[in-house]
Amino acid sequence: MLTPQLYGGLLFLCLVPSTIQSSIAFTSIARGNVPAAICAGSFSSLAGIVLTPLLAAALLGGGAGGLSADGILRIVLQLLVPFLAGQLLRRWVGGFLVRHKKVLGGVDRGSILLVVYTAFSQGMVAGIWHLVTPPGSACSSRSRPSCSR
Image 1: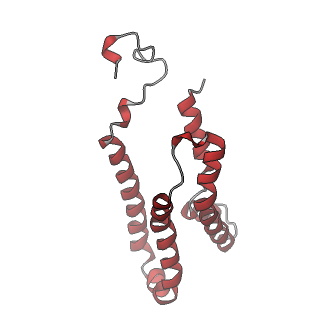
Image 2 (image 1 turned 45 degrees about the vertical axis):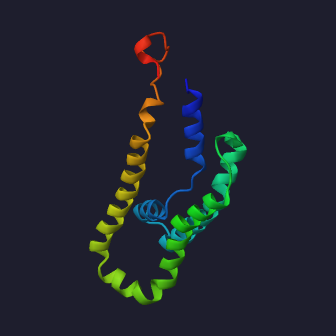
Image 3 (image 1 turned 90 degrees about the horizontal axis):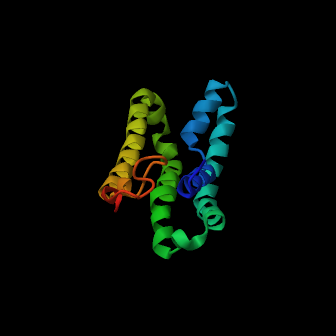
């Protein structure tokens, strides 16, 4: 049985678009149309910047947060600006990127790892694990004084 928190997390995970990298990787493995996967993944990512918060607010309720100018600016700076910069610079750096594909693949994976590590670290600093109790654990019933938060 899903707890309300787990249900909300899974629902949110379903709302988030796939990454361009995974779209390309899976399409390449299936020997599919990689250029079409790049276009579809790019569109999905751009649409997701706008649609994911709106769908999350509609399906999960707006009580968890709000839409603010600061939030929109942070999203644009973290997602849209690097994407647009890459598209604009492709003409000048595309050849270099193709020639050094193997080395840059490690940099790409490393940057993704760094983003995940940063998000995980922020959660640890915020004490996120103190807010989550696994279902069925001794503390889930809150009957023991040592389980109080």
